[in-house]
Length: 258
Image (cartoon, rainbow, N blue to C red; front, side, top):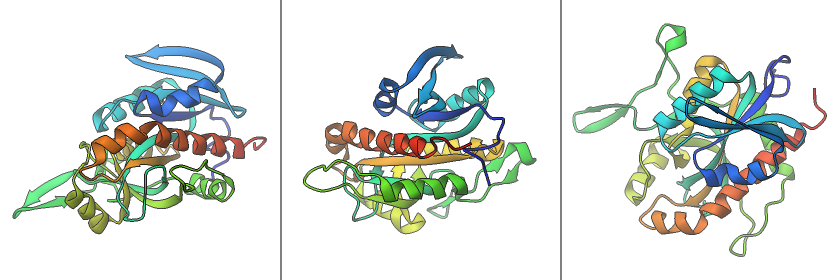
């Protein structure tokens, strides 16, 4: 079992978001804030809920997220990593503002076309002699357990006359902003994915290779259908705020834990 996001001699909890909206609310609450720039990435260090953290904007898409994670892990000693932000909901019941906590991640667009169909491949672990990873990359079990406890306690603000719901399950990652109902239904059917986004599984792959505990928390801004562009524009700030609130609650849950 990990002790507070990892080994006892680790230093900081990394909190990543792809866009400014996904980290701004956390940056506002950051105490003793310092700004550090490394290899084109701006990092913000300080304390949130009594925990030493480093915040960063990873950039949109798998390549930017992977690059940012590489620079992050090369320059900071970490206890673990939380990816926060927005996503498109895939489950039929999920509405804007609802949250999905990942149990495992999958890169749905990594693979090959064969006989007119796309076959999804597992990624490979370069650290372990190019060994195949599992198709679904599981989040850290200890972090997931603690996040589920937070889910039981957190009170999200009402949005559009309802209290946002919190789900746990698969999140799918691909380098496409999804606004197509047919593809959304396919991802839900094929992978049982509850949400889709553009960075999480790339970060998960690096964390898996480095044995760095991680978890992905996403709040849905849209339903990945033809209304996704307008819904995203309308609800991105609310969704990002709900995800940030989950992160703060998770950090607060560890207050006083050694």
